[in-house]
Amino acid sequence: MVKKQRNKTKSALISRGTVIFIAIVVAAAGAGIYYFISTSTPVNSTTPVFAAPTNIYIIGTHDPTQGYVYEQESTRQAKKGVSGGVADASIHIPLGTLVSLHFINEDKDTGATMDINIDNFNVHSNKLNYFQAQSINFLANKEGTYSYYSNLHPEMKGSITVDP
Image (tube, rainbow, N blue to C red; front, side, top):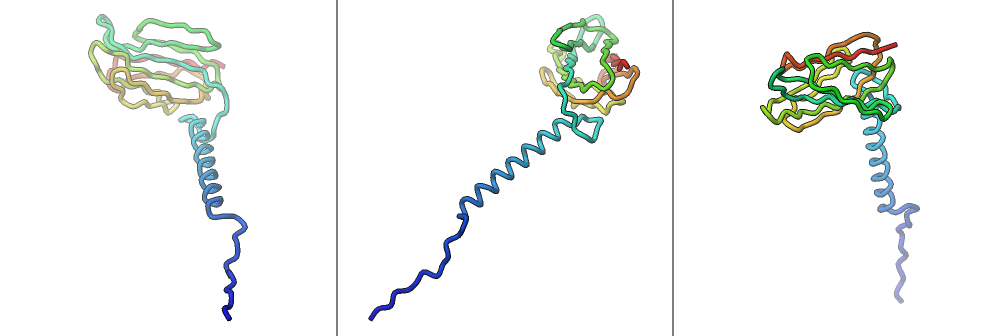
C-alpha cells in the first residue's frame, strides 16, 4: 500500500512577487518625494518653499565696446522686458519672493566661460561654457540692494534690489 505525502508547505498570504512590487513602488514614491522637496528648497533656506517663483533670466555675453556684460530678461506677471547689455544691470523684486534665476552663457564671439554670484543669497553658479545654462532658486528674504558679479570677468556686475 502506497501512502500519499501531504504537502506541508503553507501557501503564503502575499506572494513574493507582490512584496517586491510594493517595495519598488514605495522606493519610487520616496525618491519622488525627496526630489520634490530638495528642488523646492532654495539655496539660502533649509525649508522647502511651495510657491510659484518669479523667473529672472540673466544672459552673459560679450559687447565689443563694453567687454563682458550681463543682459537681463524678466517674466514677472507674464510681462517680458529686456534690457540691453549694460555695465550695471539692476533688478527689482519684492521682499519674500521666491526667485528662479536662470543664467545663460550666450557669448558666441569669444567663447569665454562665465559665472554669476550673489553672495548675500548664497547663489553661486557653475562655470558655464557657451550656450550652457543653470537655474538656481533663492528666497529674496532680506530687504536692500545686493550685488551680483562674475568671478571670471570683473567688469560683469549688476544689482538686485529687494523692495519692502
